[in-house]
Amino acid sequence: MSGGGKVVALTGASGYIASWLVKLLLQRGYTVKASVRDPNDPKKTEHLLALDGAKERLHLFKANLLEEGAFDSVVDGCDGVFHAASPVTLSPSDPQGTLNVLKSCAKVPSLKRVVVTSSMATVSFNGKPLTPEVVVDETWYSDPVFCKNSKFWYMLSKTLAEEAAWKFAKENGIDLVTINPGLVIGPLIQPTLNLTVEIFLNETNGAQTFPNSVYRYVDVRDVALTHIQAFEVPSASGRHCLVAQVVHISESLDILRQLYPSWSLPEKCEDDKPPIPKYQVSKEKAKSLGVNFTPLEVTLRDTVESLKEKERRTMSGAGKVVCVTGASGFVASWLVKLLLEHGYTVKATVRNPNDQNKTEHLLSLDGAKERLHLFKANLLEEGSFDSVVDGCDGVFHTASPVTLSDANPQADLIEPAVKGTLNVLRSSTRVSTVKRVVITSSMASILWTGKPVTQDVIADETWFSDPVFCEKSNFWYILSKTLAEEAAWRFAKENGIDLVTLHPGFVLGPLLQPTLHATGEVFLNDIINGVQMSFFVGFVDVRDVAFAHVQAFEVASASGRYCLVGHDVNCVESVKILRQIYPSLSIPRTCEEDKPELKLCFKTNKDNAKSLGINFTPLEVSLRDTTESLREKGFLNF
Image (tube, rainbow, N blue to C red; front, top):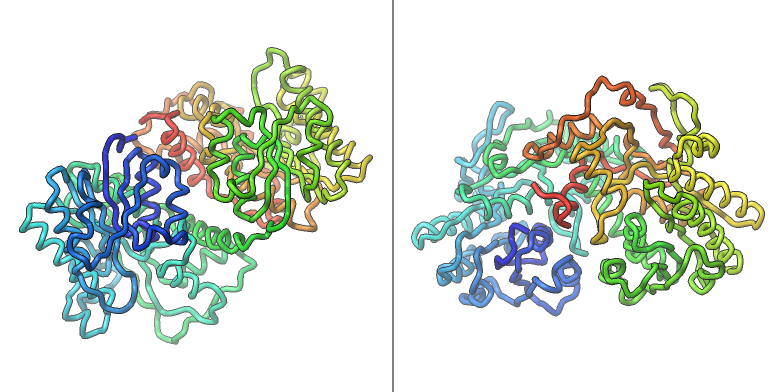
């Protein structure tokens, strides 16, 4: 909560970058006074009002860029201002909006700094040749005359706005910082398509040829974070170029082909000229703010997945009703979120619907007010799920105790896992409308066979953990998952239930719920704090697991078991990645690479998961998002 007690203003809050900036500011505890054109337009505001912390600390204002004094009430009492509002079109625009915001800022003595969203458009359009040995940096300025003669109207408008901002700031003693991003892509928070992502979409989706162009890509999340760092870091000053990578569009298409082999992407350039040469953009000032740029392949993937998600929100689940057991859990919370986004009506079970720690995060999800219904149910009580399952098209059974303690394994783990699964299945047999049951199992029910594993071994869905071996080894959690799955398959076959089981490995990723879950606890204790890091882990992102559940229900051909492991790595590798992302994070070096147990890096079959359309999230993204989420929730401080 670096922003706790601080108030900031943000202009153009419904925009692409600004929406992410609002999200990050709220996560850091800031109170945000945000201007939008029309606070009553749900397409422009609904996604903002749904953000965590918005109810308490987001205040929307109507303001007109071209009206002097329109921002006085927005800026009043603020510690800082982020000016992101600017038309992103290819036609010329007036810099008066920027000056109107700065004039309002000049009237507020409490204001410490103004951060303006500018663009690389103000940096490199000056007629100078751009060749591989050239390094563009903050000392470069676009030439208004060159832009005008070339009819580069957007570049001209941004250049004039930044020139006017610096002139006014110097004359009025305003501490100004400008952020100059390149072509911004990445996941969308807002429901509408913005121009830069539209450019990306047009040149990749169904196009026959690609332009002979070089793009300066940067991830929207990095841009939003840089704005905050530019405000919080006292030494920040001047301009900041933000470009993660300069690539020819053919290179970005090659990455997309690797990520999405089945996609039909343009293979021929629209002209026969040699490829336009790439050049370099300095990252030094961005790095001085602590910005570690997201890899391009991650940004491209997340952009595509976000666009696919927006398309999926055409409501594949509209009119359908499903049940989710154990809905307040880590995986289940994400599953509920995705199901609501897909248009499903969700009947969800929790132990206590009146416990806000278990339900508030669910009730605040988009669509929850209209289509989420909470029920109290007991895993050990037969018939407890009858009313929940009644009228459902499908059932997702995720409820199962996840604990590594062995005080009373039969009562605490095995009985709830086995009896609970059978009770849910019995309720499902009584409802003729149920088409399929999807059960959240675990790699625990696959890997513990007692057989030796080596680096050339590939674990797959034909493997089954041995209950005798698990019991002798006191692997009680593993035994509970194994016995529960065995019982489920036996019951399903005897009663004609269309059953699919999903087997995630060690589940990472951001938390929706406010409480710490078992794998999050292990991540903190064993990896971050280094209590016991001598183990091999198959990691998977919680968002991929939730999506796999939805796919397992929706894909008609889905059947049997599915291993869900995105990355087969040991703890040493994961710690190395974390140290690269967070150099300041103190992780104890208690994990020696020569320990024999760390060399048991067998592989896990991913073909079945891919048949469901799962493209696993890169491990560095999962590790980063897990760490950031734990920090935001107050479980990790650094």
